[in-house]
Image (cartoon, rainbow, N blue to C red; front, side):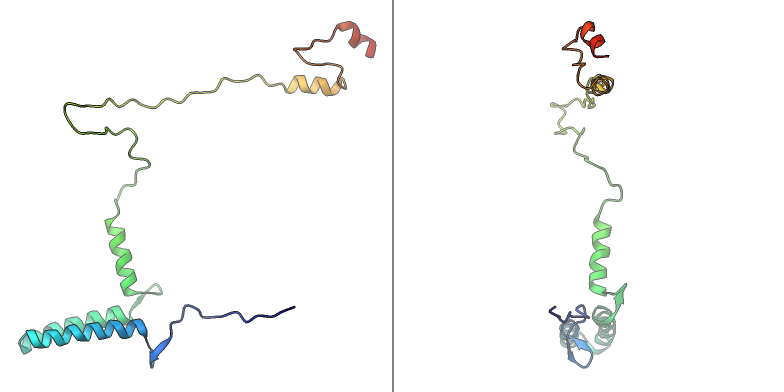
Amino acid sequence: MLQFTVPQFIEVEDKLIGSITAKQFVIMLGGFLLIGIGYKLFDFSLFVAHGIFELIIIVLFAFYKVNGQPFYLFLINVIQTLKRPKLRIWNKEIGLPLSEDDDNKIAIIPLQTIKKPVIKSRLAELSLMVDTQGIYKGEDNDVEEGEIESVQ
């Protein structure tokens, strides 16, 4: 029997420098680029305040994990959750008018379910056919009473 090695720890990302992954490096590079732009645009006191705030955001996005997933994915999930409606309605298009014009009001008619007619069960008839070993043919093909008595 052939044996194969199964890869383990497939969710672990490759490390570039020390314990910094490629995603963390790109996030830090972009953040430090924004801090550098802030150094050129702002005076020193505003640069320090802006730089500290931006450094906190960089570290948060690059290294902090919530429930085992990176913070930026957590933030995307939070935004998507907040954009969803609070009340979920199943099939909300049914029963709503197609247009809101005063001229063309559409009357909403409630849907009615159509019940199928109850079909008479043939269980008793089939049981009688089995008990008589096929002599009784059913309601449509009535067997004469003389034939049934001759079998008994």
